[in-house]
Image (cartoon, rainbow, N blue to C red; front, side):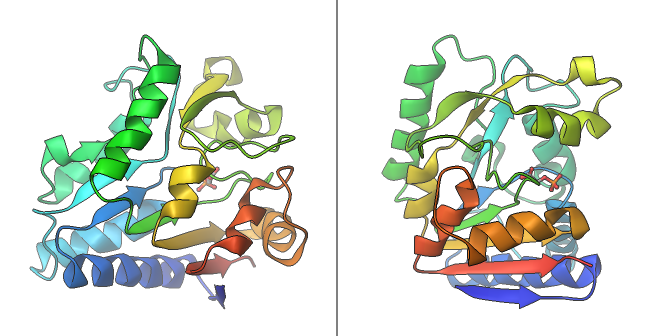
Length: 236
Ligand code: PGA
């Protein structure tokens, strides 16, 4: 585990983008696991800049996102598909059909989740998984629980997550209460994991996740068992 403390959000974003860019340069047909939330926005902006400068080519890249709100269609401005299109995909030369975000409106979410994991496996697995971390220690929408779940599955969001995400919606009532999320299986099978955390609100989650016991009540703590984990933190 490599924990890097940086002194600004800009530095965090530059470093994270450099790691992702290195992955794409070394393996142009790599599989990237991508994340939403406010933390990766700067990382994506840096990746877009590199693409615009001619330093990065996404034409052979495939992406799989971590999660999606249940019930939001891809064209809903708060859906994670919309977020990814808006913050990255529409600005680089990734082929739209090679980008995957879980379908929040799947008729049979359980079967859909299994098929999502299978699609990742069939592509050869994730080469580099980007993750944020929730204030409560969640990764993707794997909320604190009594056990780790392996497969892509549906979850009830914790009140703390709904509170944290209400800033993106007009009112808290509009925040979906359920989501579909990649489980720990596909995340832990990723060849490399890069977790980024920004701001003092993440301090406790980082301490518990990486300096405390491994337990499903702190979902990110399982990453202590990952053989190639980099954490970039700006926690001031
Ligand atoms: P944030 O979310 O980047 O918006 O803080 C991270 C997360 O909840 O995983």
